[in-house]
Length: 85
Image (tube, rainbow, N blue to C red; front, side, top):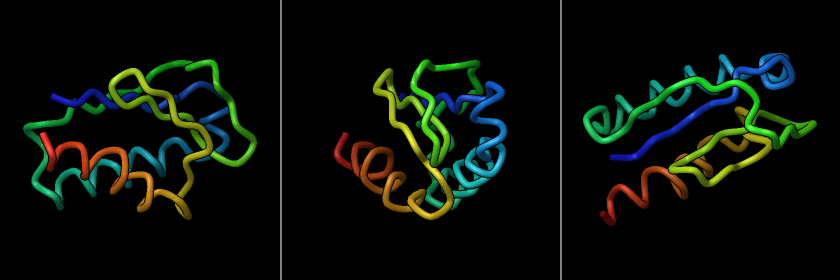
């Protein structure tokens, strides 16, 4: 099971956390990962970034996630590890 937390604190909210949540939900469903992933919101993860949202994947924190770099982030840090599990 993979645990993904998306920061929904005020800074990340203003930088588009809802859009990242929507993209994650869609990508998880499209790739048939719903039974393997727990997606939740979290208040500040302590790694604010001026160009995007902070996301934690199994306690590894990634900064600056935005719609432009989402696909690369998803494939490298979510899809690939789950396929190799």
